[in-house]
Image (cartoon, rainbow over all chains, first blue to last red):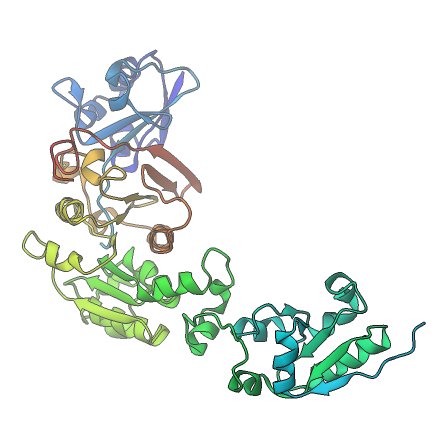
Length: 91
Length: 364
């Protein structure tokens, strides 16, 4: 199983977890596995079945937009990182 | 053992003649004195090192040696020692180096990039080979604009100011609130209600009177962004909202200003550096502005006090490298810091050829 890192702004959708293990050989399958358990996560990460443009997905340190998108291969030792933009600064 | 030959003391005029006829010049002053100026072609051999290093510096005991120091006292002792130790052809300059220079003796002094006060104040970082006097001069001449005098801007401004960044501009239209003080260390309890830029100027002025602090007591918007950033070399983005971040990014790309980006949320921080047309920009990472529910500010989400401290200092570190032109910045890399597990990681970010701000089709 690969590891999916959940960024702070999305943790409320997965019960507060910082990372989750998920099954799947591609980004699409890994996300589908997570969405089955955490439907609220799907709404924040995708729109109309595509990756949301304001959430970047990395396999290890590589942005899947510059690889094969949702079809990018994910190995059992890989880490998938979901990374929406963070705005906070001065407060 | 050879009999000791008495050495002579010579005047500056005679020393000039000896130097012209090819005598080796031995400067027995200290390194710091040498650094302030010396006779070109002379060999530095401080008096304290004479006995240990003379064999390496002047292996030939019959070499003609003109020994000098600053005024003639140390050179007298050095010459006496040399004669006692078998050197046969030694003279000591009894005049001062000022006299030597007054008579037109050759002199080489490095261009003084720093005043004596600056050399003292910044001595610890001037000692670093990648900085030196030239690097410190760059810092003193640098103009850095901080967007936000709050959580990220505070530590960045304090360290940039302390290290001698010559001009620090601060863009903030807010006043100090009691709830800021947990992390915005530029401000103090007795300044609640005071404009943040004013409080920051007081703090930075007390820390380093040499730093010019420019207050921009306004909120960055589409009308003022280009005017605000135009006169600065590096922009530090410590804003708290996406509107400002996208405005700043697009203007910085147009004016080719590097932006050091920092953002924080509770226990997490992100830092990267955007160098227009050399690396990705903010829109290359996130072409579309997220909806408001994905962008909670600190006042609703909360933030650990040390987190902006860490992120803001990482931003200051990027500023140093950009100003000095050394090292590798975070351009093309997003550094992520998780304070809860004390974990640093990074992902690659790429220039997007389709980026609406810096991609193909935009003016470069």
